[in-house]
Length: 338
Image 1: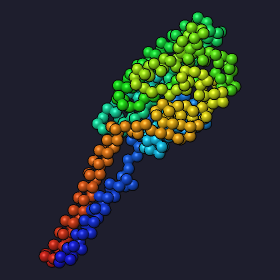
Image 2 (image 1 turned 90 degrees about the vertical axis):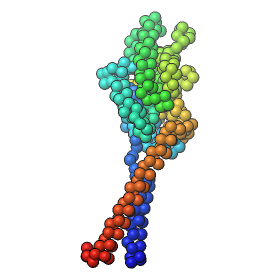
Image 3 (image 1 turned 180 degrees about the horizontal axis):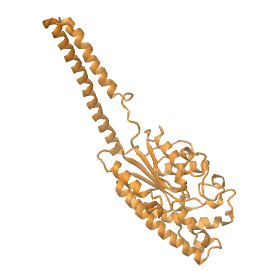
Image 4 (image 1 turned 60 degrees about the vertical axis):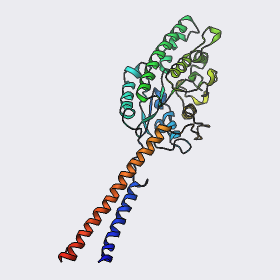
């Protein structure tokens, strides 16, 4: 009888343990990517002009960098809210506003308990279309009217970006990575009919001391970013031209990047984050991995699920063992067939 009992019970326990192992193994329990990269922006964030905006724009390229084995080596959901034609005002209040959607997403993900589903990176590029609106006032040269138009737009960008980053920071939390982008001079692109106005792009973006203009739109972006602990993806390093994007990286429309240009922009975001990109290729380094809070969250979450699922597996084995024992008892002592 003992041998028969062992013959029944031991396989049942083994089945339970195997079930526990299968449930807790990485290959048997997978929920897919849960952390998110949230992007806000204009047509550059959308990837307009790329051969495939969904894969060749700077936003998906930067996501690819973050997912690589040389970077975080995790899957990231991508939520790209960028709208072609967006200005610093429309990003907030429309048409097609992005900020309300972004804040709701951050509240749902970063405002709950735990970090497994957090938005871990937020990028913003905005202000380029605000600046392009000053072209009619400046096409005649560096006149007082041109300078006044620039000053008005600088004030608008400053106010709106300050509000946007303040709201994003409050919703995302103090440790979430936020990166904003400075702008390249798009008038230098091959085939752009405004090549002769390249001086104007330099002036608007970085100022010109010779004309009594010490700052430009990029200086405004840098200053506001610093106030909200946001990093800067520098397309004009040190505020000195030439920019990272040259004539062959810009489309003839005088605005947008081509595939090579978007790869350069993605590298600038990687560099700002603490990663190193070389020539648009994935060659990245992480200064602080995912950060202590996220690493702890991963460990705690994994342990919780493993313990719970292991217990479930063992319970399955116990139920099988009890059922087998009852079956044996009925056959041995009650003389009933089943």
